[in-house]
Amino acid sequence: MADNILILGNGFDLAMKRKTSYTDFLNFFDSLVNENKPDGFDEWYHFQKDTNFDISEYKDNNILRYIHENKKQLGDNWSSIELAITELAEAFYFVKENITKLSGYIFSKQEGSIARNHFFFERLYGKDNYQEIEFIMKIISDRYFDSPLKKSLILEKVNTLLIKDLEQVTELLEIYLSFQEYLDFEVNHLTTSDTALAAIKNIEISKVITFNYTDTPVKLFNIPKEQLHYIHGKIDMKRQFSKINTMVFGIEDKEIGKINSDLIPYQKYYQRIVKETGSAFKNFFKVRNHIGNHGFSVKNRKNIIIFGHSVDPLDKEIFQECFNLTDKNVYGYKYIFTYYDEKIKRSIIKNLTIILGKDKMIELTGERKIAFIHSLDSNGLAKEMLD
Image 1: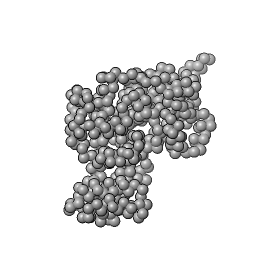
Image 2: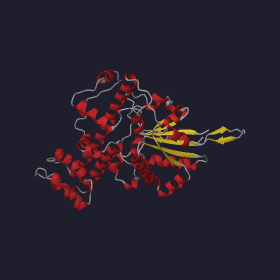
Image 3: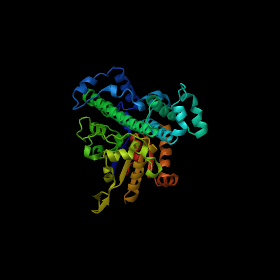
Image 4: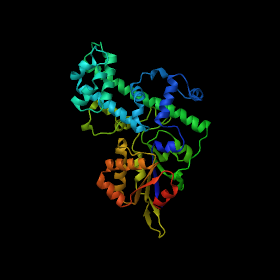
């Protein structure tokens, strides 16, 4: 008797026909900014407890503005937005470290001096994120061109502004997903879509690690909330789960010694600490026994099924910990990664190699402890799962 652990990414919600792509989110934001509220928004908003929402507070959000200006280059995945936030944060750090050299561009009276000198960053500094550097410099220039404040104080204020912008994006995301939850389950009564997960018998007793903020596994598969770990927090407009917004939305975790202190608040690990999302998922990997056919205690094997997650290195810390936990415990296990198409499959393999190292990947695939199946192939999943 094997235990099943599901690790879910946003592809899971999309497979369940939920509008949780970042394009859906940006379209929602555009509608509100243009005072064209989606159908049902006022009805949903009316029933939210202690919700004080003013869209004007979000109109000047620098992160959303940057994403809008560059959405054609960012692709279709949430990881692309997180990468954009990473590049903006690192661009700020670059500007801060080089503020003396860059002051002539930032505070120049010559109109367009920043935009016309992007090759300055490429050739002189070898920076390929000159676009983000220009964006940060323009924020400083627009706000503090004639300011008498010291440059160090200006930079401190801009960093505070960007962190606040990130918090606003997270708040707006909670509003969108909460509204979508209302539409999908209260208005449209969404039902389960056919996927490879149909192969899992008694899926409601599975343990779930979800990178999503939504209650989709609860609503569609009747999985009790105590069997879920919301690794990045969850939507909770009425603050029943926590007194604060627990949603984690930021950049790749890096070792403290390798990152400037200005960037720490952007990191996911830091937000998980501040928002107290915890590490309850580790309990899912503990040894569990059952009585076998011969009356002896037998250790349960574990299927770890990753559905709808690109295994992007942005989340490498969590995946590394999962593999460490299965390696330490004395039971049989198998990681089964689902993919939507061959391109995504190759991307998952590449990302796993980055996270685990090529030697570990060769070892685990050779031992059949890692397998890949199409996200719609329930027969394939059934064959790969340990009994």
